[in-house]
Length: 128
Image (cartoon, rainbow, N blue to C red):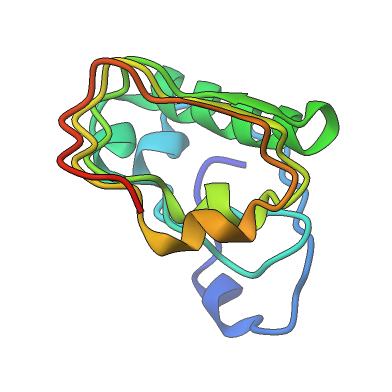
C-alpha cells in the first residue's frame, strides 16, 4: 500500500483495519490509525511531527500495552496524555517521564486497574 484509499473515511462502522505497508513514508501522511476496540483516533501532533519511525514506535507501544498492561511514553514531548491511553482500561502501569505534561485530567479515573503512574520530569501543576 502506497497511499490510503479516499473512500476509507466513509467506512464509519469498521472496527478493525489491517494494512500491510510497504512504504513507511505513508505513516507521516497517515492522520488516523485504527485500533482494535474503538473507531479512528489521531496520534498527538508531537508524535506525527517527529517522523515515521516515532509514529510506528508509538503505535507499537499502544498495541503492546493492550497485552502487557504496561505503557511507556517517555521523552516524546507530549503536552497532554493521549486519548488512546484512556481506552486502555487494563493498564496497570503508565510511565510518561520527561515530557511537557502540565495536568492529569479526570479521565485518568477510567484506568481502574492502574497501579503505577510515573510522571517524573513533567510540568505538572496539580494532581486530580
